[in-house]
Image (cartoon, rainbow, N blue to C red):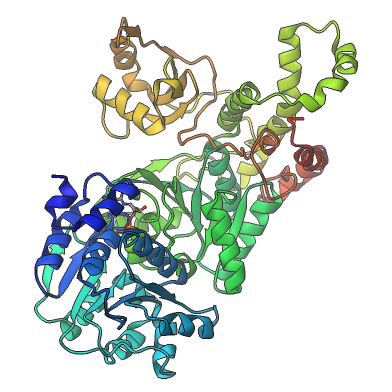
Length: 609
Ligand code: ADP
Ligand code: MG
């Protein structure tokens, strides 16, 4: 008997479970499914984002529906159109082996007549956003007076978005004797109000600690000058070439602006906010799901309920006003048991806010340094070398080869490699060499001096203070990714959670950093150290820069990396950190044009120069 079978699910649903590849029920599923199947009860289930709440209510609902009747029996309310569609799709997948179960989605921004027509054909289950649902009720296009089950999904988010009145209104059109199941990541006061008012002695399930963020999320903050947010953001992206992220801004205007700047600077970015038409929002979300957009810049409202797995980073470009909102933001990553990083860019005066969030979510933030230009160059160099290695050769070149060979004749392999890398890298390193230290510190140099004196060199020639970078001879081909390698090193050496950082996994080797204090411990542990009969060797890396962490992405944000295999939206990258101080715009003029112009043309050609 499988674990899902033990929960009491019928055969047709177990077949669907098998098709979905679910092997073990998540905690909330394990707790909720039997209760919901066995009794007619109200339920309040609190579980963080990404814990599988949809299936926790979806399977019991389908099992309890009478498919011989076409009456609407179940109503699922969810905060956003995106989520509504997602739940509908999941419900359809769960019920694929049921005969005659219709699940219909109802949401704003699409034809109400089409939706009404679908309802008319008979929908036992309706998944709806509150606004459109209310609209359809008042136009008598739906009848929910006979439902047996009402599910409030992501209740906290619905209430956050101001749907309280709509929900009350909708519920007043449903029969008293139905069961109400409320699912939520957090339990703010408004949710308790709804529970008290509309539910009858609900059973309660809590998974994990109430109100706490997902433990799979690591929280980091970076202290920068207020005008350095944008350049810092770029560096974070450049340090994580595989980034797949949501970037939160506070206003629609900032959201649009940051996205536009990123696109202009050559990143795969997109904006999601309320001023966009539904159609535009759909396009953006589709590109994001397909990974054509790697950096989705969004407002809190627009991002509610974004339900995309595998988001590696959430970046708080600005902190939200409400701590509750931070929980929602960071919950976009670390879903479905995966780990993720939530990064916060703050100014010095905001540091106390970090303490406040820590208290509330009961987790520690790590203070991190914005990587220096030379660290980023190190990462990007490795990235470039790997890209060259992984590039499939293009036979279209063949006919030109004799001529090319003639030009390159007499250059030996080593020299050729140097030239090849330099051709791309010099432009990049010119940019970062002239870049300053973006970290804002209390005891550091005076702020006014910063942009003049420290542009570039600082942190360039000198290794980052107290941190040592290592080379290790295992990598992707030994089935490590940055997370598992970090765990491996930490567990093997016996270090703490955050001692190993900037883990950068290549195909057959990797890099990582630790504090200089544990170098001896690292090196002695990995002396004559074998795994599966093979020596695992660690050396202090000669590469002065380096950094990273996060998986490599195929698109690459630098070097015209898009030219290798990824796709990029924008044209060339600007050779300047935006929003930087005035003294720097001088430098921009110097180095801008060669890079941007060239990159644009590279991209179209799709080969690597
Ligand atoms: P929540 O609503 O709690 O935020 P979801 O229901 O959206 O979470 O589930 C998050 C992801 O986890 C989805 O991609 C879903 O398909 C997947 N998932 C859910 N349950 C399981 C399971 N038992 N095993 C594996 N994956 C699961
Ligand atoms: Mg959900």
